[in-house]
Amino acid sequence: MITVYGAEQKCASCIHLPSARETMEWLEAAVSRKFPDTRIQFHYCDIERPETEEEQQFAEKILEEDYFYPLVVLNGEVIAEGDPRLPTVFRHVETAAEKQI
Image (tube, rainbow, N blue to C red):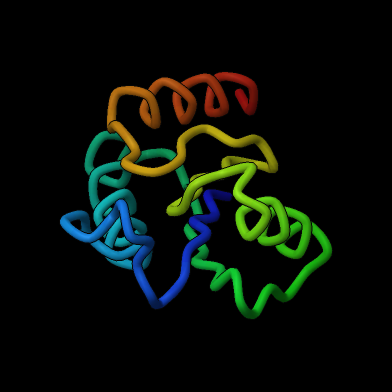
């Protein structure tokens, strides 16, 4: 499970970047193309409306500025924040997929 945390309003330093939701859609398309045989679910969490305890914890850390959004979390582990890079995300997805084999 990859969860992308963000907010409807972009942060001041992210004005020229895609929104967190757009980032999630971009990551989902790229990961699905790169790993067509790996079933990975994607989920978007608005930091103003977290639904689970884990989402609440990450949302609080973003609001306290411990993390930048969009924050990308794979199976509970932070793998990217701010402007995520595909090679980094791919490396973490590949490692997670290997663990499941």
